[in-house]
Amino acid sequence: MTSTAPTMLFVIVGKNEPLYEAEFNKAVGSAAADSVSRQNYFVLHSALDLVEKAAWTTSNMYLKVVDKVNNQQVSTFLTAGNIKFMLLHAGRSEDAIRNFFIEVYELYVKLSMNPFYKFDSPITSESFDTRVRALARRYVS
Image (tube, rainbow, N blue to C red; front, side, top):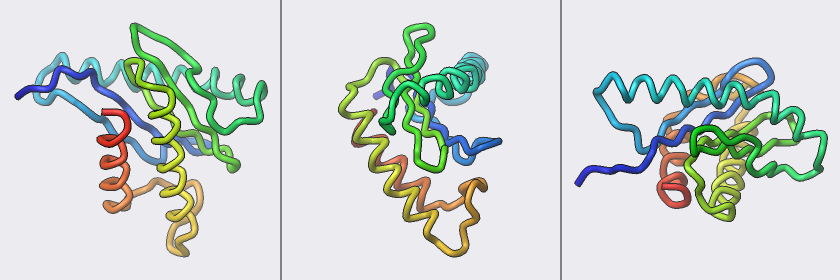
C-alpha cells in the first residue's frame, strides 16, 4: 500500500540555525520528491519572519498557522527560550497539531535538562528522533 499523504516537515529552529529536522510521509527516490523537499524547507525558512512578527501579537506559545503556501500551512510553537517549533502540513486538525507541539516541547525540555546537552545546539539524539516520529504518527500523520 502506498501513501499518498503529502510530505510534512517539522523543524526546531534555535536562535541562529536549525537544531532538528524531520520529514514525515516522504516519497523516496525521485527527483520530484527532492524538489518538493527543497521547496518545503524554503517555505519554512521564509515563514521565520512571520513567526517573529506573530510572536509580538500574542502571549500564547502556540502561534497556530502563521503562513499558507500552495495548499500547505505553517504552524508554529514558540518556547520561552525563543526556540521555534515549526510544522509544514496540509491543513491538519488544530487540536492535533497543538497536542503534537506540546508533547514535543515536553521532550525538548527533558533533553535540555540533560547535563550533556548544550542549549541551542543541534539535536543528535536518536531517542529524541524516534520519539518525535512516534508523536508525528500519533497526531499528524
